[in-house]
Image (cartoon, one colour):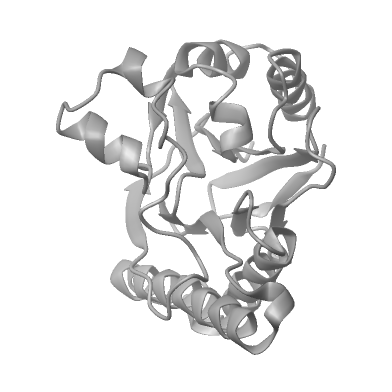
Length: 258
């Protein structure tokens, strides 16, 4: 575990990322990455059953990180709306890149992935997503889901067509309504919030959230362990419950600079 550089004049960041193939899949189609200044973190999950899902995920992470690295204006001196727009455009650039790759190579035809990502800017966290990879915030020991899945089952739950219990076995529960790379255009969801000391953010693929309930994830995050140990405990718990998919976790803890 390393303490990362300052994210502003008051706070530093601890981070840890972990990905695991799980117990069933032969390859890992999840990917994650961060920029050199440790302000931006992203996670992608290659679409199961699609060709070259791992390529789509890796290319998406590479593209968004590259876009953020190159956009020097994002660092400190610009407004919050500008940074939100930069993140939106980076995700759209990744979508176009993956889509163009899928059209130019038959081996990549139909490939796609999800993405969730976040950027620390001054006193704010800007976060975005497409698909069903999630971002959570643990604050004051309470876990809150910051993203809403772009999926058919999420839409049906929202309008009350199915119950939480019915959703667990719903035949089309894995169908996404948005993803990276399958259409020339995508509309990411981008939001912002003010972060504070002791906030713990988690980015994760659905290999974790399909295996572990909200309450179980909250319990693990509240353990008084290092981020590395918490991440390992979460992954092992998901594997003990079948590990049917790849599992990826990024943990980020905001600390006061003493």
